[in-house]
Image (cartoon, rainbow, N blue to C red; front, side):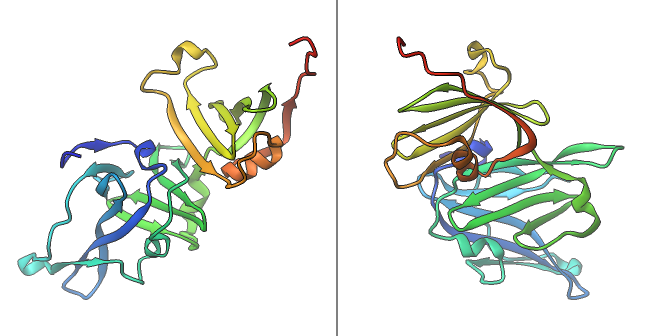
Length: 246
């Protein structure tokens, strides 16, 4: 991988987290803020997570060393600090990466990403020049304006047996393709239900997970739970009858 190469969220899925490196700005008043985060991923190398102002961006990049900022404090660099929530996931594989949106009624933007691991999930957020790592913590009033598109409004089963397949739509209108075979389940997001549009840049992988069962069939409720998706209370679930002649 080439340094400074821009990466996409889907590039992280299926990669094992090997190490976490963080750079911290020590201010003159002893205040501490996160400057940079590197995720060292198997088969991908170090991935820099940074924020230009709002949202987070990913690129291939080697961690820098500590340095002084003269009259503005200094920057320290640490590996696998127990004080960094991301460190608890070292050794685990990233199962899904989802976009987090911010909208307060006046402005809206992509605020960050949620990474899901076998033992839990963690959020990476860029809010007003601050890079935040949020695990179990509540971020206060801003939480009311953060949204992750994981609620399913409609799902139609299109294949039974092995593989099991469904077309789904979220409450915000996102088109999803759900697939399960031999214990492996994937969720793909596409720009429309037209399969001719599925090979473009607007399509992306949301989730890839192996449940270890080698199973070829799964109930939709179990699949949604495995993928971290939630059915809306009034979700429409369509399972057409199987044609015995098919």
